[in-house]
Amino acid sequence: MRITSWNLLHGLPIPPDEEADPQALLSAALSQLATDVIGLQEVDYFLERSGNHNQTGNVASIVGAKDWAFAPSLLGSPDEDWRNPTESDNKLITNKSEVAPGSYGIGMASKIPVESWHRLELKGSPVGVLMAFPVDGKLKRVYVRDHPRSALAAKLDNGWLIINTHLSFVPGFSLAQLIKIKRWANTLGVTDKSKILIMGDLNIPFAIFARGFKWRSLAAMRTFPSWYPKVQIDYFLSQKLTSKDVRHIQYPHSGMSDHLPLQIEVD
Image (cartoon, rainbow, N blue to C red; front, side, top):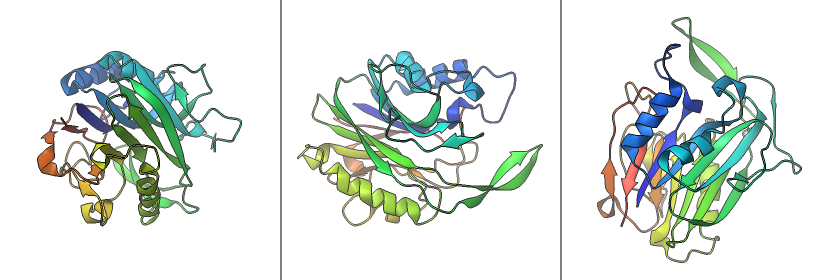
């Protein structure tokens, strides 16, 4: 089973290129990955900035995955006015759901049949951080407020439980969110801990903190920024498996996103 985690940056070509075809770049990258299960971070759901597409559903179609799910972190676009999801909003949109309002969050797609989907709510940090963004060829520092996060879990019919997440960029807050996910992972009915994986953009640049005391990192690779990787903030974590139990497959920058995809293969 080949599993991929990729922060898609809402399908944005990197470096930015107005003449690039984002859909062609995405299709080419996904064809190379040839994945069975993929966890996506920073994906749009019918937002104008990315062409009003269901990006998770599109990825599922490209890789040939029948089952997919999208967990909105916020309603609206992060580039514009947005609001937190409420109890009246659909917080778990799947291939069986009706179309929902435009939103932004995380998604998963699987060729392996999914028995059930699960979502864990994670509060955003009450404070934001200053982040640097390229504007007119120069880096501009902008205050960015955090938003609610979530973890999305798929129970597969082969007995595996795979959890995808995108944690806060606020130092320390991401670690608290990860601890909550690790506890939650052992409550979803899979008793074989060798078949429980956490993957995603954890926004934690030190593997020792991402692992903690009871979990192991399965693939060591600098994943950010994609054009000149300096740090690893994307991970696969397991309580029982080690890096020797999996095959880590590496790919060069495909021209899409500011993260490199992280991929492993398990028996």
